[in-house]
Image (cartoon, rainbow, N blue to C red; front, side, top):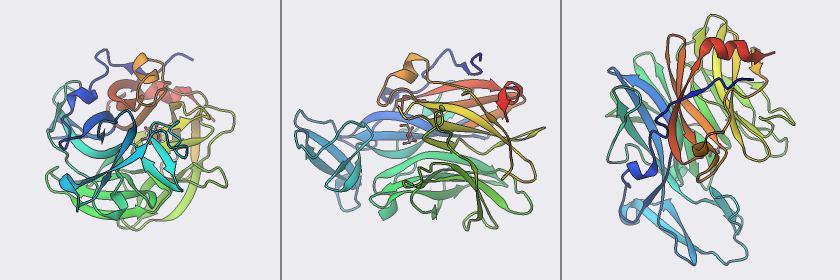
Length: 350
Ligand code: MAN
């Protein structure tokens, strides 16, 4: 199948060197997986900025948010030659029965007039707060709901990964709503329209025993209490989305139904993008799904980096038939690509 994604010629748009560290002693390792929105004629990104202290020859240093520590960050140190330490995954490791992330992420705004050149805020916009965010906050989805923006993001802590919500209407004042989906859950995006008088959201609970990393929908009367859960799309053994999948962002309205992009990963942790088409009036009904990915990690900046072989989108803007994603490539940089909605719809299988 021909590649449906038109990558920006100026990719990568944002690299770690473009981002100022949030505190002395930290280095920006990755800038990735932005939430995307339009505000006052500008394109806004909610970047995930992943930082850590420089590692030494002998030790790996792990940052953990702790309000009692200097700059609010406590640095844990692990000897690299400790036989109990398995550092095969650059993103996280287990030690004596506990899991740690190798970086701590915060969220930071970036703004653009033309959709390609972004001015990145000098400081963190939102950092983890409280015991459910002590390992950081990640992969924010932004939905324009009525007259405000609803931010849903992964809240990471020793308790696991859950989904927390923040609301804002001016990108200056932020109202924290706390946890809306308890661990293990992530990849949550709220629909931008109500259906049948209720709010709807994608979410992604995980179940280790049943090998479940499937996409679910839920509905809510008030955005914070969610029920009516239904699993709408499961991983497909032997295919590109065989181990895990998660919705990218709020779905977009098309004449055939809701079009939702999602990421899918295989057993080699290769992350591609695909799409689902859902019934307008009943988003628990899947009408069509990508057979092949609509985008694969083929560019050099997608194949190589902190975690290579990854295209991960959690935000886009729609302009007529053009859906522009801003995505994380190799968990290292932020890139742009555009799709024709018509072409994505034509590519879907049953
Ligand atoms: C998980 C999350 C994402 C990340 C991918 C690929 O799904 O941690 O933030 O981009 O893995 O590493």
